[in-house]
Length: 227
Image (cartoon, rainbow, N blue to C red):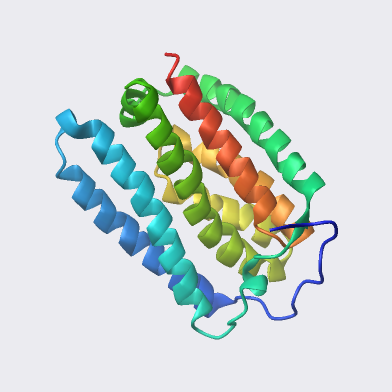
């Protein structure tokens, strides 16, 4: 994952077949996961949210490998490329920036719009004690970011980069936001998608964006534990 220098980006890259396959399978998987989670009672909210985190990671991995199996059978073409350590540190710093940015976004959003708390399960799990928080950090701050970055940067942003920065960065970030639902998290996800899309477009590697996403989610979950 880490090297002292970056390597040359393979010429082959995913295109529309890979994008539609990965996104389609991801959406189907997330809908099925959501239906399963909806059957779990509120008394088991901590179990429910951790199932969601594991499921999200597995669905993203499955969607990536479905796209990989189509034509471009080279994981380097999907962003699995070695990267200099400094870019991982940049990713960590941007994750902290994104964490701060979400307070600005949500402050403006909730000034104009009132909606139910869609993070209640996360907050309950984060406040459920040390073991509950530890498990939540694994499922929500590691597995979920990995699954989402595999699909939304490794496949979708990658493929859309052929249309320039508007397609690769803004377009993929918009898709990433909408997939999170029409609520405040759409705007938070769009912000993270922009940052990670820029990193991916610059470096051709998913790993800096993975670090952004892990740090961002992790800090949010740690913050929930203090509420």
